[in-house]
Image (cartoon, rainbow, N blue to C red; front, side, top):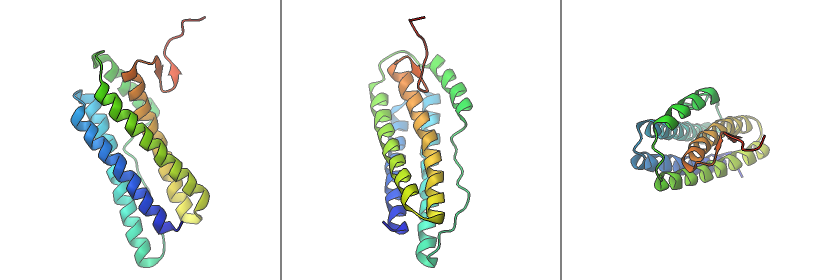
Length: 168
């Protein structure tokens, strides 16, 4: 796969996940949940803008010019603190539509991460660096979506850690 082809595939993945978050924002009623999804949607749009610009420059010059790729997703500590606030405010009702959308988003985030991991292994130089940064960012997205989904599903896990243990 050429670098141009890889960027086009990445654009397809980022478009899919951005659109999922856009849809999820219309389904979620909770203001804090909505805010988190809007942040993820905006982050994915930034990825799309970045990738589109990289592709256009690469097509014109044959060179991949890397610029710093920022993420709107905060650190794990901030995510945990905000998720705890959200957990206190959310009712314990069935939120099937939200869970379904988040499950779909998680699946696409994982699939996107696998693609980026593959590109890190296949692309040389700047292409590898660019996809490695996307891989780092997607890991944060996966953690965010998984934490929200774990809470909504009442699994007893939060960020892959068991919240309580009945055995001592």
